[in-house]
Amino acid sequence: MLISSTPLRISLGGGGTDLPFYYKNYGSFVLAAAIKKHVYITVSNHFEKIIKLNYSQTEMCNSPNEIKHPIIREALDIVGIKNHVEINSIADLPAKSGLGSSGSFTVGLLNALYTHLGKTITRKELAETACHIEMDLLKEPVGKQDQYIAAFGGFSCININKQGKVHVVPLRISNESIQDLEHNLTYFYTGVMRSASDVLKDQKKTSKRNHNVFESLTRIKEIGLKIKKCLEKDDLDEFGRLMDEHWMEKKKTSGKISNNIFDEYYDLAKQCGALGGKIIGAGGGGFFMFYTNTREKRKKLRNEFIKRGLNEVRMPFESEGTKIILNLEGRRNEHN
Image 1 (cartoon, rainbow, N blue to C red):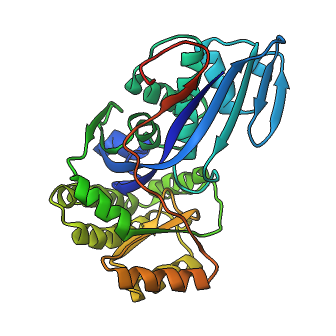
Image 2: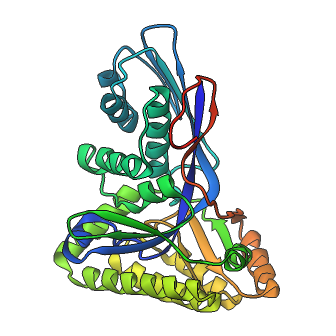
Image 3: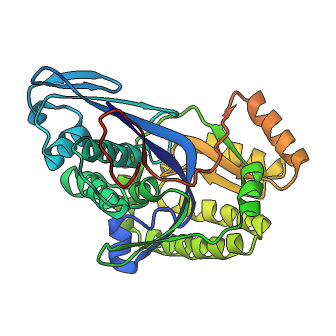
């Protein structure tokens, strides 16, 4: 048996520009950070000639083409495993909460399966294979940031050219700024689970009849580049103010990103002293992230949101990408 651990992520700038309908025209820049919340995949031999799966459901199949879970079905086909395998998955936080869980699941699954076979694969190959499964084979309306941050971890600047080629560069951020960001960022669960695909499909559909979507995404990309510069200069308050600009532009790209209740939450956070914030991921639900620059403002923010029934969740940053944390099979690959 072996276990892979793969981080979830938060987007810090440029989110949404990693979608094909945008980057094929303008290129993309996304700044994302891995967090210490993980997806865990266990893979082991099964003594019977079957495939046994345990995720939110349980499946017992004789061959990959019988599998209902689309990502597992395609991953097993790609790596060439036909049977005699058991796969289990659990996660620190729920799916459909805006933290890139689908990309982390796919990368972690591939890492575990290739290690199970004793094969070596680079982080870039893991990310690209995961993108191929989700974007090409399953036709999901997703971008490329989730798979790459899951594979590489840390604070990563993800550049995508018009041909879809990805170049990842670590953000030059000081350890002191990382610690300050962890203190100054607060996260609250909205209690709403939503499908990112629904939001992203609407965003793409809207862009076809309203070119302003492309203009907003271009501004979001420009804001992302500004966020990169201010984080590298340790100007965290400017990051908070840019997050406010980012959120206002993001809401213009789809009517499903926010609603009256979320707008009221955001206004409340600003009244409590937050410089900026946003719903993490595609929008429409999941987690709010807010930036405040004093302990007093954070205390007021927490009290007001907890009073309204929203749970706070701590999300420290994670320096590592996907890795094998247990391997009882004696095989090794690059990620051990």
